Length: 179
Image (cartoon, rainbow, N blue to C red; front, side, top):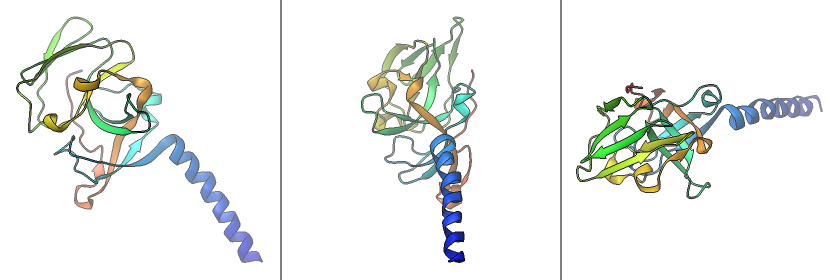
């Protein structure tokens, strides 16, 4: 009887610890598809940090997991390219950001290995909107296709790659882009 009580207590404690962590702090995410290749491959297993963006805004270059605006039951993973109030211009695959102050920055994107050099677009972002793109541009459905990403749809950032073990690490895919 005492053993049963200890097991019950252990299960209750585990639930009290695991459920809040899973719901409010971090959750697992499995990459599906090749839109973020070579940064992430199909079946990569990640832990998503859900708490950081409650205190800080996403920054350019962050890899985020979010609910697809066209269907909130679907989750995507992409890289933030444009921030609220900015204009993102793509001219034959070259991405230029016009900042809120009017200054322009052409992004060096070392993570992109296959660009669609025929693509041209201008997108103006409103408050609380982000422009996101996959690293494998020809294979990515992203803001170029379905428009800006509302901040409210962002779940969190890719914080830790668990699998494949050989590539495990903190902040996978992190790059520093001009803010």
